[in-house]
Length: 255
Ligand SMILES: Cc1cc2nc3c(=O)[nH]c(=O)nc-3n(C[C@H](O)[C@H](O)[C@H](O)COP(=O)(O)O)c2cc1C
Image 1 (cartoon, rainbow, N blue to C red):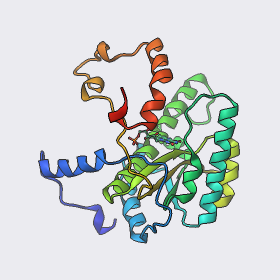
Image 2 (cartoon, rainbow, N blue to C red):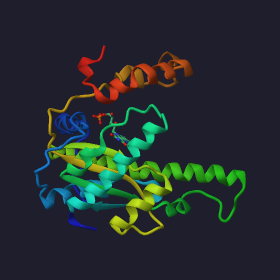
Image 3 (cartoon, rainbow, N blue to C red):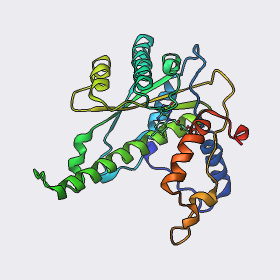
Image 4 (cartoon, protein in one colour):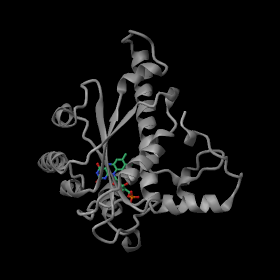
Protein backbone atom coordinates (compact mmCIF):
# COMPACT_ATOMS: atom_id res chain seq x y z
CA UNK A 1 0.00 0.00 0.00
CA UNK A 2 1.43 3.40 -0.91
CA UNK A 3 1.25 6.32 1.52
CA UNK A 4 -1.37 7.99 -0.68
CA UNK A 5 -3.74 5.05 -0.16
CA UNK A 6 -4.79 6.29 3.26
CA UNK A 7 -6.15 9.73 3.51
CA UNK A 8 -7.97 11.84 6.11
CA UNK A 9 -11.69 11.24 5.61
CA UNK A 10 -13.77 14.22 4.52
CA UNK A 11 -16.06 15.75 7.12
CA UNK A 12 -19.59 14.46 6.52
CA UNK A 13 -21.72 16.98 4.65
CA UNK A 14 -18.81 19.36 4.07
CA UNK A 15 -20.10 21.78 1.45
CA UNK A 16 -16.74 23.13 0.28
CA UNK A 17 -15.41 19.73 -0.72
CA UNK A 18 -18.68 18.85 -2.46
CA UNK A 19 -18.62 22.17 -4.33
CA UNK A 20 -15.04 21.51 -5.49
CA UNK A 21 -16.05 18.04 -6.61
CA UNK A 22 -19.06 19.38 -8.52
CA UNK A 23 -16.93 22.01 -10.23
CA UNK A 24 -14.95 19.08 -11.61
CA UNK A 25 -17.96 16.87 -12.40
CA UNK A 26 -19.78 19.68 -14.24
CA UNK A 27 -16.67 20.62 -16.16
CA UNK A 28 -15.89 17.16 -17.35
CA UNK A 29 -16.79 18.07 -20.88
CA UNK A 30 -16.13 16.16 -24.06
CA UNK A 31 -14.19 17.76 -26.86
CA UNK A 32 -13.23 15.97 -30.05
CA UNK A 33 -10.46 18.30 -31.20
CA UNK A 34 -7.49 19.21 -29.09
CA UNK A 35 -4.63 21.70 -29.14
CA UNK A 36 -2.12 19.55 -31.05
CA UNK A 37 1.11 21.08 -29.76
CA UNK A 38 0.48 20.71 -26.07
CA UNK A 39 2.78 18.38 -24.14
CA UNK A 40 1.16 16.56 -21.22
CA UNK A 41 3.57 16.61 -18.25
CA UNK A 42 4.45 13.06 -17.27
CA UNK A 43 3.21 13.60 -13.72
CA UNK A 44 -0.27 14.37 -15.05
CA UNK A 45 -0.52 10.84 -16.43
CA UNK A 46 0.47 9.53 -13.02
CA UNK A 47 -2.11 11.75 -11.30
CA UNK A 48 -4.86 10.62 -13.66
CA UNK A 49 -4.05 6.94 -13.30
CA UNK A 50 -3.76 7.34 -9.53
CA UNK A 51 -7.47 8.21 -9.62
CA UNK A 52 -8.21 5.21 -11.87
CA UNK A 53 -6.43 2.90 -9.43
CA UNK A 54 -8.74 3.74 -6.53
CA UNK A 55 -11.95 2.82 -8.34
CA UNK A 56 -14.32 0.17 -7.01
CA UNK A 57 -14.65 -3.12 -8.90
CA UNK A 58 -16.61 -6.34 -8.63
CA UNK A 59 -14.74 -8.77 -6.33
CA UNK A 60 -12.11 -6.01 -6.11
CA UNK A 61 -10.72 -7.64 -9.25
CA UNK A 62 -9.45 -4.37 -10.77
CA UNK A 63 -9.61 -5.94 -14.24
CA UNK A 64 -7.99 -2.99 -16.03
CA UNK A 65 -4.74 -1.83 -17.57
CA UNK A 66 -3.94 1.61 -18.96
CA UNK A 67 -1.49 2.12 -21.82
CA UNK A 68 -0.22 5.67 -22.08
CA UNK A 69 0.48 6.29 -25.76
CA UNK A 70 2.97 9.07 -26.40
CA UNK A 71 4.24 8.03 -29.84
CA UNK A 72 2.54 10.23 -32.49
CA UNK A 73 2.81 7.55 -35.20
CA UNK A 74 0.92 5.08 -33.01
CA UNK A 75 -1.77 7.67 -32.25
CA UNK A 76 -2.05 8.32 -35.98
CA UNK A 77 -2.42 4.62 -36.80
CA UNK A 78 -5.18 4.22 -34.22
CA UNK A 79 -6.90 7.37 -35.50
CA UNK A 80 -6.70 5.99 -39.07
CA UNK A 81 -8.39 2.83 -37.90
CA UNK A 82 -11.27 4.79 -36.38
CA UNK A 83 -11.65 7.02 -39.45
CA UNK A 84 -11.88 3.86 -41.59
CA UNK A 85 -14.48 2.41 -39.21
CA UNK A 86 -16.43 5.66 -39.48
CA UNK A 87 -16.65 5.08 -43.26
CA UNK A 88 -17.76 1.48 -42.76
CA UNK A 89 -20.55 2.65 -40.44
CA UNK A 90 -21.68 5.21 -43.01
CA UNK A 91 -21.78 2.51 -45.71
CA UNK A 92 -23.74 0.21 -43.42
CA UNK A 93 -26.30 3.02 -43.11
CA UNK A 94 -26.20 2.77 -39.34
CA UNK A 95 -27.44 6.36 -39.20
CA UNK A 96 -25.40 6.92 -36.08
CA UNK A 97 -24.11 10.50 -36.01
CA UNK A 98 -20.46 9.47 -35.97
CA UNK A 99 -17.92 12.15 -35.06
CA UNK A 100 -14.73 12.90 -36.93
CA UNK A 101 -12.16 10.57 -35.43
CA UNK A 102 -9.26 12.33 -37.16
CA UNK A 103 -8.98 14.39 -33.94
CA UNK A 104 -7.66 11.31 -32.14
CA UNK A 105 -4.26 11.69 -33.80
CA UNK A 106 -3.79 15.16 -32.29
CA UNK A 107 -4.92 14.36 -28.76
CA UNK A 108 -2.05 15.30 -26.43
CA UNK A 109 -3.21 12.86 -23.75
CA UNK A 110 -3.94 9.41 -25.13
CA UNK A 111 -4.58 6.43 -22.88
CA UNK A 112 -5.80 3.05 -24.12
CA UNK A 113 -8.05 1.25 -21.66
CA UNK A 114 -7.52 -2.50 -21.63
CA UNK A 115 -9.88 -4.94 -19.90
CA UNK A 116 -9.12 -8.43 -18.70
CA UNK A 117 -12.35 -10.31 -19.32
CA UNK A 118 -10.90 -13.47 -17.81
CA UNK A 119 -11.88 -11.97 -14.47
CA UNK A 120 -15.47 -12.89 -15.32
CA UNK A 121 -14.49 -16.15 -13.60
CA UNK A 122 -13.94 -14.19 -10.39
CA UNK A 123 -17.63 -13.26 -10.28
CA UNK A 124 -20.57 -15.55 -9.43
CA UNK A 125 -20.61 -18.02 -12.33
CA UNK A 126 -20.86 -21.80 -12.50
CA UNK A 127 -17.63 -23.59 -13.33
CA UNK A 128 -17.31 -25.37 -16.73
CA UNK A 129 -21.02 -25.22 -17.40
CA UNK A 130 -22.66 -24.11 -20.65
CA UNK A 131 -26.24 -24.32 -19.42
CA UNK A 132 -28.71 -21.49 -20.04
CA UNK A 133 -28.60 -20.76 -16.35
CA UNK A 134 -24.87 -20.20 -16.50
CA UNK A 135 -25.21 -18.07 -19.65
CA UNK A 136 -27.33 -15.74 -17.55
CA UNK A 137 -24.71 -15.65 -14.80
CA UNK A 138 -21.94 -15.06 -17.35
CA UNK A 139 -23.89 -12.21 -18.92
CA UNK A 140 -24.28 -10.68 -15.50
CA UNK A 141 -20.58 -11.23 -14.78
CA UNK A 142 -19.66 -9.45 -18.03
CA UNK A 143 -21.78 -6.52 -16.94
CA UNK A 144 -20.02 -6.45 -13.59
CA UNK A 145 -16.71 -6.40 -15.38
CA UNK A 146 -17.70 -3.64 -17.81
CA UNK A 147 -19.11 -1.52 -15.00
CA UNK A 148 -15.89 -2.00 -13.04
CA UNK A 149 -13.69 -0.83 -15.90
CA UNK A 150 -16.09 2.07 -16.56
CA UNK A 151 -15.89 3.10 -12.90
CA UNK A 152 -12.11 3.22 -13.08
CA UNK A 153 -12.11 4.99 -16.44
CA UNK A 154 -14.56 7.57 -15.12
CA UNK A 155 -12.26 8.29 -12.18
CA UNK A 156 -9.47 8.89 -14.68
CA UNK A 157 -11.69 11.24 -16.72
CA UNK A 158 -12.64 13.19 -13.60
CA UNK A 159 -9.01 13.48 -12.59
CA UNK A 160 -8.17 14.84 -16.05
CA UNK A 161 -11.05 17.31 -15.71
CA UNK A 162 -9.71 18.29 -12.26
CA UNK A 163 -6.40 19.11 -13.96
CA UNK A 164 -8.29 21.46 -16.30
CA UNK A 165 -8.34 19.26 -19.37
CA UNK A 166 -11.17 18.43 -21.69
CA UNK A 167 -11.72 14.77 -22.32
CA UNK A 168 -12.91 12.38 -25.00
CA UNK A 169 -14.19 8.90 -24.18
CA UNK A 170 -13.93 6.78 -27.31
CA UNK A 171 -15.30 3.27 -27.39
CA UNK A 172 -12.93 0.93 -29.13
CA UNK A 173 -15.18 -1.00 -31.44
CA UNK A 174 -15.57 -4.48 -30.02
CA UNK A 175 -15.23 -6.44 -33.22
CA UNK A 176 -12.43 -8.93 -33.50
CA UNK A 177 -11.02 -7.05 -36.50
CA UNK A 178 -10.55 -3.89 -34.46
CA UNK A 179 -8.84 -5.76 -31.69
CA UNK A 180 -6.59 -7.53 -34.16
CA UNK A 181 -5.62 -4.24 -35.79
CA UNK A 182 -4.78 -2.44 -32.57
CA UNK A 183 -3.30 -5.17 -30.36
CA UNK A 184 0.07 -5.52 -32.15
CA UNK A 185 0.58 -1.74 -32.20
CA UNK A 186 0.49 -1.77 -28.42
CA UNK A 187 1.80 -5.25 -27.67
CA UNK A 188 -1.47 -6.18 -25.98
CA UNK A 189 -1.67 -9.93 -25.18
CA UNK A 190 -4.42 -11.85 -27.01
CA UNK A 191 -6.13 -12.64 -23.72
CA UNK A 192 -6.94 -8.97 -23.13
CA UNK A 193 -9.41 -6.59 -24.82
CA UNK A 194 -8.96 -2.98 -25.82
CA UNK A 195 -12.11 -1.36 -24.51
CA UNK A 196 -11.78 2.40 -24.81
CA UNK A 197 -9.45 5.21 -25.68
CA UNK A 198 -9.28 8.09 -23.25
CA UNK A 199 -8.13 11.34 -24.84
CA UNK A 200 -7.53 14.58 -23.02
CA UNK A 201 -5.88 17.93 -23.44
CA UNK A 202 -6.63 21.61 -23.96
CA UNK A 203 -9.51 22.02 -26.42
CA UNK A 204 -8.84 23.44 -29.89
CA UNK A 205 -12.10 25.42 -29.81
CA UNK A 206 -14.18 26.71 -26.90
CA UNK A 207 -15.93 23.66 -25.47
CA UNK A 208 -19.67 23.69 -24.87
CA UNK A 209 -21.83 22.08 -22.24
CA UNK A 210 -24.15 19.38 -23.59
CA UNK A 211 -27.75 18.74 -22.63
CA UNK A 212 -28.23 16.88 -19.37
CA UNK A 213 -31.51 15.52 -18.03
CA UNK A 214 -32.94 17.42 -15.06
CA UNK A 215 -32.74 15.98 -11.53
CA UNK A 216 -36.53 15.45 -11.69
CA UNK A 217 -36.24 13.39 -14.86
CA UNK A 218 -33.82 10.91 -13.36
CA UNK A 219 -34.78 10.83 -9.68
CA UNK A 220 -37.43 8.45 -8.41
CA UNK A 221 -38.43 8.51 -4.76
CA UNK A 222 -39.17 5.12 -3.23
CA UNK A 223 -40.74 3.68 -6.38
CA UNK A 224 -40.37 4.19 -10.09
CA UNK A 225 -42.24 7.27 -11.23
CA UNK A 226 -43.94 6.45 -14.54
CA UNK A 227 -44.07 10.12 -15.54
CA UNK A 228 -40.37 9.71 -16.30
CA UNK A 229 -40.87 6.60 -18.40
CA UNK A 230 -40.52 6.71 -22.17
CA UNK A 231 -42.52 4.38 -24.37
CA UNK A 232 -40.72 2.60 -27.22
CA UNK A 233 -42.26 5.06 -29.71
CA UNK A 234 -41.15 8.05 -27.66
CA UNK A 235 -37.66 6.64 -27.48
CA UNK A 236 -37.58 6.07 -31.25
CA UNK A 237 -38.67 9.68 -31.76
CA UNK A 238 -35.99 10.89 -29.34
CA UNK A 239 -33.32 9.00 -31.31
CA UNK A 240 -34.59 10.40 -34.58
CA UNK A 241 -35.14 14.00 -33.56
CA UNK A 242 -32.93 14.71 -30.57
CA UNK A 243 -29.95 12.39 -30.42
CA UNK A 244 -27.74 14.22 -32.93
CA UNK A 245 -28.45 17.51 -31.16
CA UNK A 246 -27.59 16.32 -27.68
CA UNK A 247 -24.37 14.77 -28.96
CA UNK A 248 -23.03 17.71 -30.92
CA UNK A 249 -24.76 20.90 -29.78
CA UNK A 250 -24.46 23.35 -26.96
CA UNK A 251 -27.37 22.65 -24.56
CA UNK A 252 -28.18 26.36 -24.57
CA UNK A 253 -28.77 26.24 -28.33
CA UNK A 254 -31.15 23.25 -28.38
CA UNK A 255 -34.85 24.10 -28.70
C1 LIG B 1 -19.30 4.61 -22.44
C2 LIG B 1 -19.10 5.81 -23.33
C3 LIG B 1 -18.75 5.62 -24.64
C4 LIG B 1 -18.54 6.71 -25.48
N1 LIG B 1 -18.11 6.49 -26.76
C5 LIG B 1 -17.86 7.51 -27.56
C6 LIG B 1 -17.33 7.27 -28.86
O1 LIG B 1 -17.07 6.14 -29.25
N2 LIG B 1 -17.10 8.34 -29.64
C7 LIG B 1 -17.34 9.63 -29.22
O2 LIG B 1 -17.10 10.56 -29.98
N3 LIG B 1 -17.82 9.89 -27.98
C8 LIG B 1 -18.07 8.86 -27.14
N4 LIG B 1 -18.51 9.10 -25.86
C9 LIG B 1 -18.69 10.49 -25.42
C10 LIG B 1 -20.16 10.91 -25.42
O3 LIG B 1 -20.60 11.18 -26.72
C11 LIG B 1 -20.33 12.14 -24.51
O4 LIG B 1 -19.94 11.81 -23.20
C12 LIG B 1 -21.77 12.65 -24.50
O5 LIG B 1 -22.12 13.17 -25.75
C13 LIG B 1 -22.04 13.69 -23.42
O6 LIG B 1 -21.17 14.78 -23.54
P1 LIG B 1 -20.24 15.26 -22.32
O7 LIG B 1 -19.21 14.18 -22.12
O8 LIG B 1 -19.63 16.57 -22.77
O9 LIG B 1 -21.10 15.40 -21.11
C14 LIG B 1 -18.72 8.03 -24.99
C15 LIG B 1 -19.05 8.22 -23.65
C16 LIG B 1 -19.22 7.13 -22.82
C17 LIG B 1 -19.52 7.34 -21.36
